[in-house]
Length: 316
Ligand SMILES: Nc1ncnc2c1ncn2[C@@H]1O[C@H](COP(=O)(O)OP(=O)(O)O)[C@@H](O)[C@H]1O
Ligand SMILES: [Mg+2]
Image 1 (spheres, rainbow, N blue to C red):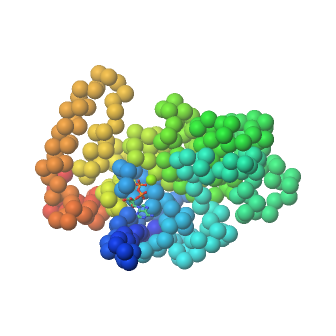
Image 2 (image 1 turned 90 degrees about the vertical axis):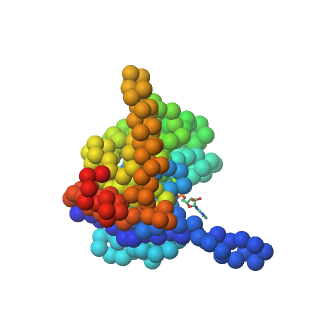
Image 3 (image 1 turned 60 degrees about the vertical axis):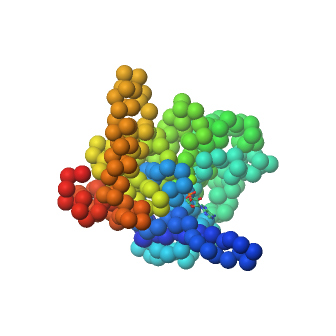
């Protein structure tokens, strides 16, 4: 059962030009996407830079003005309540950003950084607060002396772990993680992801994991949404998307994952070329005359693809 449903979300940013600063056009950052989140699952939201991923994340958490669409939480329409930062919803939906440093107050010690969400959302006694914070620091693998330090005293990977700890402080049901490891070295990425997994096993939190890299999300996610120009081109569980990608854009992203085994490098390169050619040649089968992504159509109970109706019947 899903506890969050996003229905036909649109976020259009006005473009203002000229002396009068008039709105002359719009950026269709998010243009009609729907998704639902079940407890304890991990969803990968993947697409190239500028495709609208962060806008979706920020809309769900109430940091972005929604043009149209709805956000349903436990059956209730909360679209108009999203910016009320004290509601039950905002306690249960937290976010981690790519660069935790910029979202931490540099003059605060880690103890207070972790305590902040607790003080906003929960009335804990000092003892309870302390206990919770020690539990948090423990689950991300730090010892207690970290609590008296400042954010700049930690490495990038350590700061992202602190970001994860802060996001789960109020025991939310959903954490939106916007490129949480994109700025980190590969070995450090794996470490942060492992902590995130462990936390999920312990608390049953759901993740909406945003990334531009299908390689990174592969081991994290149950379900994937592939995004292009503000729309979903493909939506399915992990096997559907990695083993049977149907949209050319998904295949293109998959072919862009670098080969780990150098023996496969040549094969990969050929595959990449083939996909690239098909992408150029068969564009109209995947995008309408305005270059817009078609509506998603189910091709199985777990897998939907944005294909033209002509394509839908065929074995693309
Ligand atoms: N505040 C804003 N005003 C105008 N355009 C914006 C704003 N924020 C984002 N955009 C545009 O919306 C599109 C989607 O941005 P974003 O959601 O940040 O993409 P992603 O996270 O996938 O890189 C981009 O074209 C971006 O330039
Ligand atoms: Mg982004």
